[in-house]
Amino acid sequence: QKEVEQNSGPLSVPEGAIASLNCTYSDRGSQSFFWYRQYSGKSPELIMFIYSNGDKEDGRFTAQLNKASQYVSLLIRDSQPSDSATYLCAVDRGGADGLTFGKGTHLIIQP
Amino acid sequence: DAGVIQSPRHEVTEMGQEVTLRCKPISGHNSLFWYRQTMMRGLELLIYFNNNVPIDDSGMPEDRFSAKMPNASFSTLKIQPSEPRDSAVYFCASSTGTVNGNQPQHFGDGTRLSIL
Image (tube, rainbow over all chains, first blue to last red; front, side, top):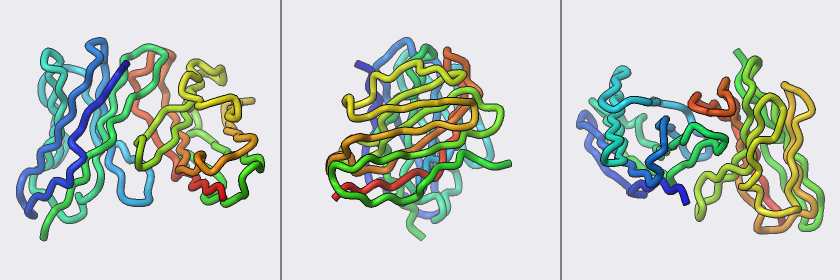
């Protein structure tokens, strides 16, 4: 059974600091990894995706992937109160199975 | 560009009634996904279409749920008869992915369903 695990939080980070969100997955065949942000009462919004080991940077966001450790993370630099949301990790094996989502980490940025 | 469009945004109905949720994917996207989100279970994939063909419906909870995609621009998710435990937010998402996946999915605003 494919599983994606995230700490539910809440994770509280002071404004301006780096927020670090972590995700582990059980299926070694997973090929694509996605981070979505979901504000309360809203739909998931794609933030980052990563396919290869290493780091991928986009503005204040950096996704990190380590396939050997089955671990993917999202770093948010210079965190802002508007970053407060639930962050969902999603994993795709690449076959006809679609995405498997974690239950999300609730991030709170304290002004 | 218009995103994924879902209707209705909210639906409140009594147990036993038929519920139909609708979705229009982003133009040019050939994969469409239906998800259900609850506090207890998080976001769960119900069914996935590629080029209008159902590829994986293993997430459909039981025979009361059915989904169709008659053409590239429209899909429905139907619950008949509905039960209180079906209350959730139902999301539709689309992507340019092939059957082999790998492409980011874009979500609609969801339908908040309440079964009394």
